[in-house]
Length: 623
View 1 (tube, rainbow, N blue to C red):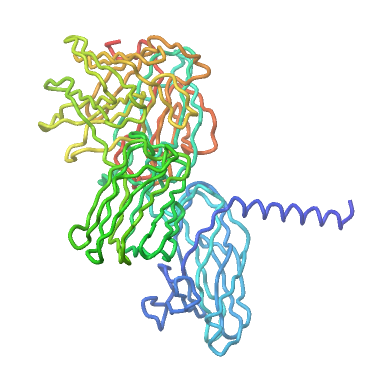
View 2 (cartoon, rainbow, N blue to C red):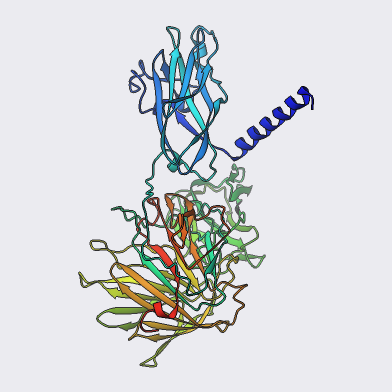
């Protein structure tokens, strides 16, 4: 091969590697004014540090002269490549020279070049492009430092520094070291014996931006074993935080919602447009129409009510001014024809707030929904809406005490709008023969040893979803649920994996629940709640499904990012942990632990969960 061909081949390979690097890398920015070490500069003093520049990012830049520097700390979660991809700067005068270091090692140099503008060039910013080559860094914290090694008397200004990290799953909290992750978490007494065949753990997870969506799915298969043990414990990491408020940012319930204020109803008014809806105005001074179209989008599957089917409440508050007018409210939804409410005569001088109730199943899940308001008067109207709110109605949970003694309370719940419709389960007491109908969920509470209160430790929904909690730690009122399990053969690839339950017989002496599934499978669930863990033993008495096609259970959880999750790691047979939503597909073992290394801002104290495949000698005594 000629030298020319060899050179072209090498150049092509270099270009290809460079392209692949930038496709997979993720960019993070350090603003100059955010540096925690600026050499001799005081960035709070505009004359010595951060200066106002209208063209700079954030309207601020930092002026540096020779021997002054910017320094930042950043973190990476695994061994990865890091590249200084850009330094945005300005200069007014002769060239200046900079050196970039990572962890004290020089990784690149660049010169500003000469710019002259009699002062105006300070606001004319340029990009350095890639500085040096990518460097390999290990997991943990690192420092990047930009030093002015040569400058004229006027120096130069830096707007920001960009680092590219070859880790698409690294988020801003992780990069800027705003979360704490522990590398010394270990689980003891994890089953690794070979007395029963290993289970197969299959990855069915997907990316999501909705914290309330169960996007982590791990299907559990086993061709022979019938008994499994689930143990819920307080997270291994240590924290005094107990965040537990639902977070719906990033979620889409695919149902119409509206929250507008100070709306002038004008037939020639400007259209209001967002990603999810559009409001237009039409008509004449005596007949005006306000039409809002809601666009359908992909639904975030959140367990509980059928989010896109529940009814809505419309509330309109008019400003108390203008003449009397007639108001017609109508909507286009699931029926694909306009449905109208009774016409109202509105006197804004007398009454200003009105409410309309939309029945369940009013709205379409996959087509445009439309809300139309018509205003009619014999004279020119002056209608101003102070606020218009359309939101889903509150669902009602009717609770019944099924059993209570000095240790346990068993409670049943009938949810007035359950996403599985009218199919519910029947609960029967083994000893009293009392039957309870229309149950969508049962919960078990255990008496706390240090107070007169009770702590919820178990929840079982009609669709087969089980959640476990350890006893609430001393000093707290309650802690949130975390990773759940769909008990019973199911299809793990479904949007909502389910194994619907037909009936349950309660053995309140042994805290045992004999479950008959709608599809003919049978299982017994045994609860043993003791401080500081809750154990659920699941024994399948008969399995009608093909075990190779249908998992016996599916682990269901949530991961948006490390530090914002219900689980971030999985370890099978106590081997090296893996990112829960990483690139693994199938794992084999007798045990799996789902836990968090990184303290989570979401449901901070929700439990770690251990699943073990066990033989008869290791089952609880009541088996």
